Amino acid sequence: MDRLGSDPPGPYEGSVGYSRVVRAGQHVWVAGCTSVDEHGVVLGVTPGEQMAIALQAVVAALERVGASAHDVVRTRMFTTDISRSGEIGRAHGEVFGDVRPVTAMYEVSGFIDPRMLVEVEADAFLEQ
Image 1 (cartoon, rainbow, N blue to C red):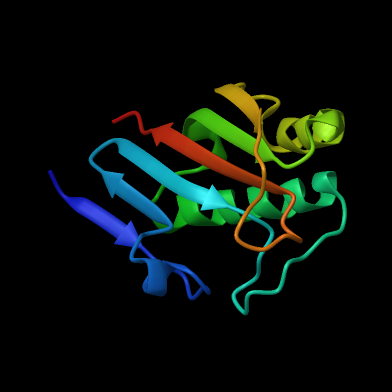
Image 2: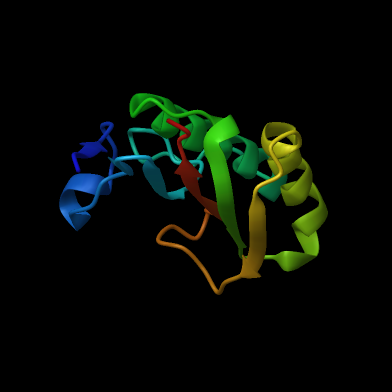
C-alpha cells in the first residue's frame, strides 16, 4: 500500500512534525483544520465564520490527494463555545449536507492560539 502525505505551507506542520493530509490506499485522514492561513493569521471572528474557513482547508487537503468532500465518511468538530453549535453546524451542513458523514461536536478548553474558536477533522474513504 502506498502512503501519500501532502503538506501545504503552514505555521505548524513542519515544526510539529505532522501531515495535514495522508492517503493510504482508499483511506484519507485530514488533520485538524482551523481558520489559520499559511502565515499563521487567524481568519474569521465568529465560530461560524471560522468553521466555514476551516472546512475550505479540509476540502483543499482532500483534493490534494485525489479525494473530495463527497468521499468523507466522518468528521469531528471542536469548539471552545458549544453554545454556538448552531452556527458551527450550519457551516458544516453547507459543505456536507448532501454527504451526511457521521460526526460529533465537542467543547474543548482551547487551541494553540486563543483566537481560534473551532477545529475540524475529516476521514474519507475512496471507492475504487
